[in-house]
Length: 61
Image (cartoon, rainbow, N blue to C red; front, side, top):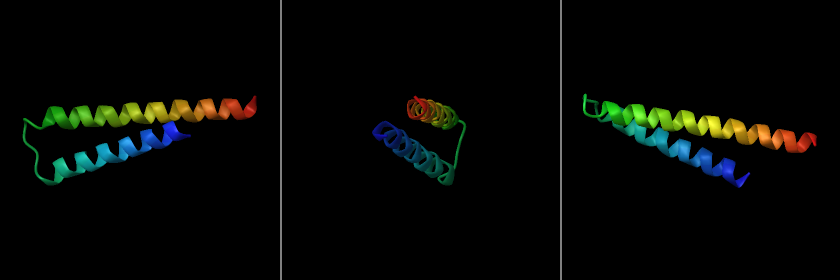
């Protein structure tokens, strides 16, 4: 469960950074950062989903 919380906090922090960059205005130089941050958030979502599946499997066993 601790890992899940760490992933969630990381995702929230990435969302904060992405929101800040969006609000400060974006230019073509920032686009790679936006893309990388979005990829990171998607990766965290995938990891959270896998952890949830593992927790579910443990409960069923």
